[in-house]
Image 1 (tube, helix red, strand yellow):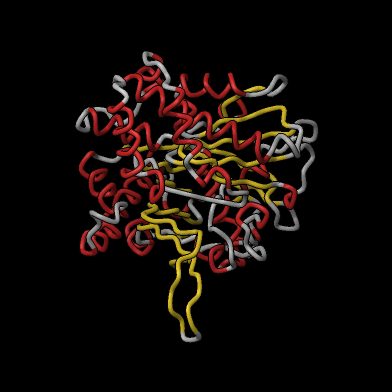
Image 2 (tube, rainbow, N blue to C red):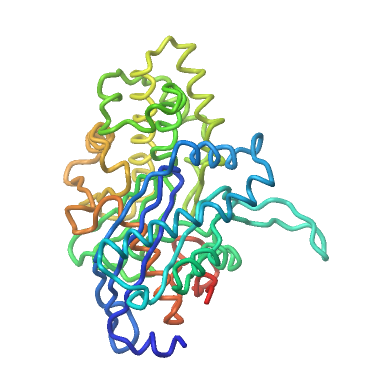
Length: 402
């Protein structure tokens, strides 16, 4: 059935993303033009919808991401239940754009990451113990397929893991298509729950691109705000809390200096299992002992994210590549205080921008990326970048529910 899809010059795919911030669901309606050889020629965002998670669902997901609180029965139900959110956002997107299901070729959904273990955990096999890499996203593709009537691609990270990669980051595949420049070296810095950087040297081929998770993005800040306000506020809108506080440099330096993740060389990835509730609790306890106000604590958490981002460039990027532009995407692109902190630490001649300035809405990048990766899978083409994930070879990503 996919031979007809491959013959079309224009394909229409919906990408669905729900990230580690646990804030909600993004859905992007993407028109993709292909060349005669099947490669992507043009990517056009035709529509975009975001729906926030309810506080009740956020609480469920936060518990599921905690080893101490997660329950198997809740996990099983959530795997199916969260899919109803994906169905709803697809229906909203099609209604907004006046589309019938017959006009959408496929849906590609990331799912909601619950646990990411890219470092390898000792596990018994028939031939002895081995290190097993793993990642787990909930969201049942069969529910989305049944409710919408549209074929669904999901579970994209697993194949890269099977090929020896970390299963992340995957969005750099889109970055290589839309953000590459013949003249300027660029870093595309996504700031969701976790921060991740795509490094695109000037006039780079795809095998010259590399990427890695820089560390915490919004995750620590959001957790501290949510807990301090008993869920009344979920994040620091515009960085308005942080800007009223004073950064405690010693606290920031301690949490940076004592973290072995920052010393690891790319490729590398991380997640809520490292920078989730337990990490935020440790940060909060240290801040309380130092007598910091709520505003000072949020300013310091914001400064930690900014430091982890720019220092990663100084350690792993700037010594090797001439970078002229940093392009920020994700929820963190709306945090003006965070952007100011990043800008102040960049070297002269390196400017800071948001993806909106390049025609990609700040919140839509990852949903667009998964639409493009789902398309490539239907075309029979790999869409992991092995210099990014560390996989042994390029692979076709995902499972298809017909």
